[in-house]
Image 1 (cartoon, each protein chain N blue to C red):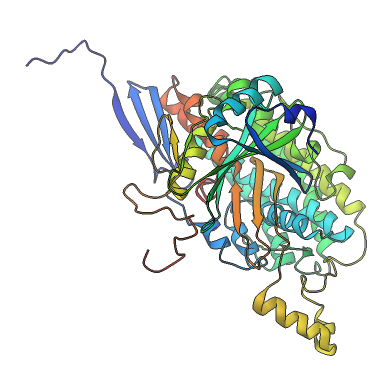
Image 2 (image 1 turned 45 degrees about the vertical axis):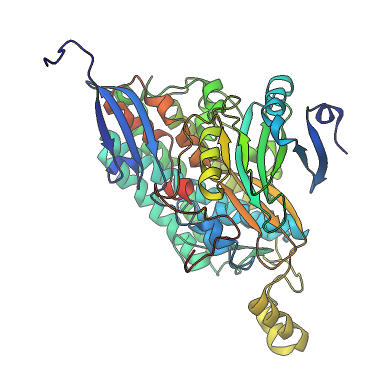
Length: 145
Length: 394
């Protein structure tokens, strides 16, 4: 069960507690709204990380994961947004936390998820001009791509 | 066409990826106006080895060896974070002795890492001799690690369920001898630096950052504590029994290079305290849980009991299954918040293993530290955030 504060987050699709950790699924088009609310109203001032999980071949295949931290409440909250393989695009949260910049670049680089309105969406780990996104499940560990 | 000589002109300087003060393969693109940094842009990825992808293709127990190679200056802390995450998914509790040993080893690793930081940071700024003293003590710590695990650096000593081996005879005496040296040795480093006018000139007021900026940019660890935030995961969310230890979180408020130096020195003293407490209260018993089908059976049993032999064979050949679920495990690495986000689909391999290296977040704050400062101060600012490129690029 989630607390009343968490239930008041805008655009919640689903919520669950797994191993004592709160996870909330957000409607992807409203991710920035939800993040801004959490930062400004509920003091989730720290963005711990952003990453993604590829559930290929299930659709929607991607889950973008945001790990937020409220220093006042000593509480971590995981936001998730499900994205399909065909339209893997979501708004950037760099306007909410500057820390999102590199994490979004990493997700873009390794998963091929595009972040709209990101100030500097370039590859960060792989060389420029690299083809493919290595952390996708249909990208092989070795051999021809 | 005549050139306008009065127009402001800047020059681009590539620092790294082979520059000694970038501690590995970091490249910083600097835009300079004379000697002043107008813009700094760190460029990472030179050491990207796809550890997360590899982990997804290894069995749960095999992936432990990959975690050593993430942050190679604190392998035990990486092992610990990964194992704690997997143990959480399995619902497995390591025996008390394993937990106390883990705390002790994590703190020895912190000392080891801080010694490398102090030595290299001082050498960057020109204090050559500090490096020699730091590495003298570090050598003793590495010998302790070698004694326990057989390896100096890539220890893989902390395993799912406990530790790889019982520590050898004479191990605890050795740790006691080495740790007894530390308080006076830390005084020695401080004698060389803390009141040294050149050191103070090069570090005080240099690379300062406000607490709000540091949090917003994703910085953690000693960098945040030097800005005045008393947040340490060992206290905020104790793991592996840290709540039974008595220690303090050193903080300062200036947020500059000098404060980060003082915070880390104070942390080393606290680590010594924790190791002493761990030694005094070390429980007896096994160092790895008895969990059939997950932890390898004892050698003796494996050779005398049919069932144990079968489990041994199964664990080695096909691994073990971890119930479907996901967990984020955080630990306080010497550099800040280290987190492993592990997703299991119920199989024998991690479905997803994301590693939040503290250096990645800390490095993102570098432009804020150096923009507007002098080129020479870039060196001390970079050294002061103590990043490890393996931790950034993974």
